[in-house]
Image (cartoon, rainbow over all chains, first blue to last red; front, side, top):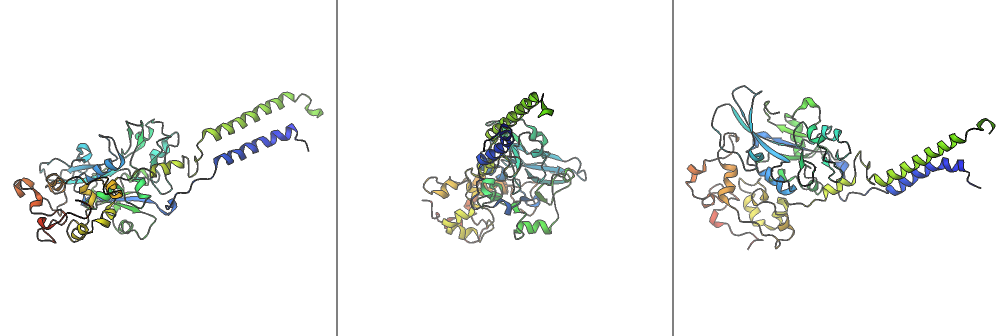
Length: 243
Length: 167
């Protein structure tokens, strides 16, 4: 049987699709860690935070974050009287070296650790023009350093101010929820070193996780819930002045 | 074929399109990373790349395996819930090979006040002191043993011996 030109042309697209499938190969399997078994989040118990800055230091050491940039930071709030609309907030060096003493002016004073909220419906991943940032199958918002153009769109899109352009790589950078640790069965550097247990990693797919149980049975909230980002950094004991 | 007697130019056009589409598919298969779209609209291999970064903090479980004597003291004291590397710093290299990196000396004058210096914004239940008034310049571990700091608990500062790994 001879192949006519007509048949050749009909077969060509099919052959191209088949070849593409061939070169794509089979995906690599992750060893000893099943992504679909986890859905990571974080509990931040504001009532325990002492503003020591150990988490900020640990994050910088673990993730080699350049000086002056923060994947997590601690804010100090002062709310005078009832005026929760107008808090006075400071965070010298991201709270890395603690906080200078403040004058007693009455009202409320407290610390709030901040970091990426690892939103399930995150604005930052939606705006990326090249697919360099994404929510992983286990619920962690990550940046593909090799694919990022450094356009900064995601930095503008994050309503929590959690992203920055790494001056060394000129790519977007952010908290990875210590993805290199949690996939090995460790907790994040900030949760590991937090001396008061303010920060705790939670697996929202594991019903036996005690932190999961805590979130289930206590009044917790996320930051900027009206933005419907499905944030997964749950705050306990948070004041209404925190945005 | 009588109906298509002047169809030559159409066929040539179709051929050009077919070649164009084929070239596009070939180019796409070359330029789009192999793992793109594996899990979603991103490079699936990026997950493994992020996950392969080196660990700096070994985790308290790694410390407790060797330094059982310290763990014994610490687990009974009020610092039981404070992880080793919160004070001692990142020591995964030491955990991998104890000879490769010796933990740095702790400066208690800096470390203790980092948490315990009195501050208005700290929770009222958290033990805090104005260090200048509290000790008058005497270093903290003169009275308090950092692994079990409450005076009278477990062991005193002088009774603690160097732990297993250190010399």
